Each structure stands twice: as structure tokens, then as C-alpha cells.
Image (tube, rainbow, N blue to C red; front, side, top):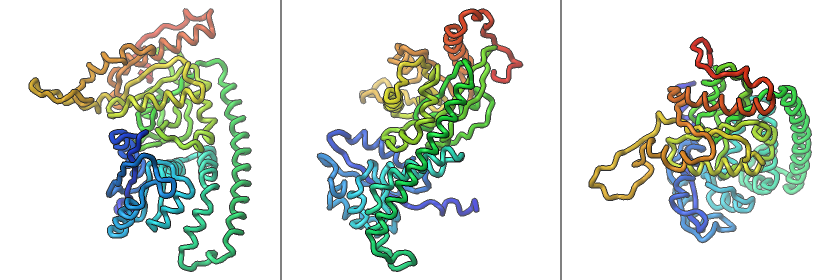
Length: 406
């Protein structure tokens, strides 16, 4: 089975547009991320298509000439999937499938597919299923048109629109059922959070694939699933952690991403509640990524949307072991770039002036771990003292070699 694993990957091409709101360098970043998403979902990207437009075409997202170019390429190279970097409207999907005659996916559908693959628990599967049905409902006509192109087949012959209306009713009923099921689970999880008492709660937040689960494992000595792929873990995990002699609860949450589908934000409400109700946020950043500053902005935007942006926070810049630095020659007159800035120079930029405690670590090699743990300890202790003002003298940070968390 393992020998044939590479044959399970389906070939795909990516399509994106350069607009007034999305310049070329930004599109390249998004397309790099889209390729990583496609790989995570199980696709091999063989080519990228880009087009410069004032705004995406309302009928086919890209121009008719570009659509024909994509069609010719996928037909010549037997490509089965075309993935667009933005969410497509139902009519755009319908028109593109008619024009290109292969499976068309947009960024939202791709992310939903990854979430469906990664969901392990019944709760996560319920959340993903709800998001998928909400995405599917307005696109049923497009899907039925796609089915009508199939040659024969049992169940493919029928009055048409009647089946669509029946499917719509079934899906609406299923959405209502899933929402009620999630409400019940949300109440149960809220009760669980309340039953944790007044123990300080810290939550790991950050962009997807920045190393939150690896950090969780290192701090709590647990075995949370961690992998170098996007959305490696979807389920919220809570572990008791003791630093020095101070216990607190640490939560690992689902990673954020740019252009996060609104359906997922709604269906993962309870997961985001873990962030909303945390006492301390540990914002993990992959400093080895070229777009880490954009990732920080994206996470901060989502934190603002869920009203969690004013909480105490620690900035943890992870993966310093992967940080690449190319020193410029003295006679090199080309402009400075991210690759020419050393880690020491980064530490002296806006990061050192941040209003939050900041530390640079490697969750993999545990470099600067003690500095980070002391920082977490200090922040947790502040919250603990404000909650229990009469036993603040009971805690003192110390490094104990017998402590399994050190």
C-alpha cells in the first residue's frame, strides 16, 4: 500500500488573478500557500496560471481567453482538477465546469476537504459536515448540471429540478439537525470549561503549521498529533502543565489561515470559544516563513473578530532552527531583503518594542525553552495572584531537573 502512495495523488493546476486589491507579489504568496493546501489534500500541482484583471470576471472569474488556455492545457496533459485561489460563486463554478470540462475547486472547497480528511472525533466531523453542507446548498444546481453531463448511469435519469429541490430540503434539514447537535455539544463543552474551576487557562493560537502542537507536546509531555502539513490537528486538546510549581491548563487550538471560509468560523464556534475564554494567549509564529508578519496580522484580525484581542499575550517566535540567513557581501548594492536580515537583527526591530513579552525559540530542539517557560510562568502567576491574592507567596519559580516538564 505504501509503495503506491504517490499514485494516489491527483494532478492539478492552480489559477489566480492579479487585481488592484491583490498585487503580484501577494498573489505569489497566496499561490504558494494554495499549493501547500493542495499537497495536504492529496494533489500534485503541475502548473500555475495567473492573469492580470481589474477585477475577477463575474461569469468565469478569469477571462474567456485564459479559460480556453487552461482548458487546452488540462486536456493535453490529462489534468483532472483545476483549483482557484479565491471562493467562486455558484454561477462561476457552473460556467467554469462547462468551459473547462474537468473538476473545478475553489480555495474554500479545498480547505473544507482538508478539514474533512483531518477530523478525527465525532465533534470535529460534525463541525466540518455542517460547514460542507452550508457551502454545498447554494451550489446544488451547479452540481446537478455537472451530473447531467455524465453518460447514463443508474440514478442519473430523472425529472431534474424536482431532485434538486428534494436535495435542498434534505440538506436544509440536515443543517438544522447538525446545528442542534453542535448546540448540545457546545453546552457540554461550556460546562466542562466551567468545571475546570479557577485554574488559569492558556491557549496556543497562531497560523496553521507554525508548530503549536509540537510546542504543546514539549510543554505538556503529551502526544498531540503534529505533522508538517496544514491543519494537522483540528480537535481542541487541553492538558495540565506545571512550570516550576505553578499548575495551569494549556489548550491547543485549530490553526488560522488567510481567507478562512466563513462557514468554518461559524461551525468551529466552540473551538474558538476556548480562545475567547482563555486567560492568556500564547501566539506562536513561524519566523522561518517569509510571510510571518502577514500571518501575525491574519491571526490578530481573527482574534479581533471573536473579541479576544485584548487578552494578555506572549509572542513566541518558533522555528529559529529553520531560519535562513544569507549575509550580503560588502559590495552588494541590491536592496535589503528578508533573507539578508539575521535573527539578531529581527529581534531588534518592532518585535523588541512589542507591548507583549517576546521570545525566540525552537519547539523541536528546545532552544531558549527555559526563557520561554519563565516568561509563561511570570504571566500565569500574575493572573493567579489577581485571582488568589492571599497565596501569592506559595509560588516561586525554580528549575528542577526532576520536573518532567523541564
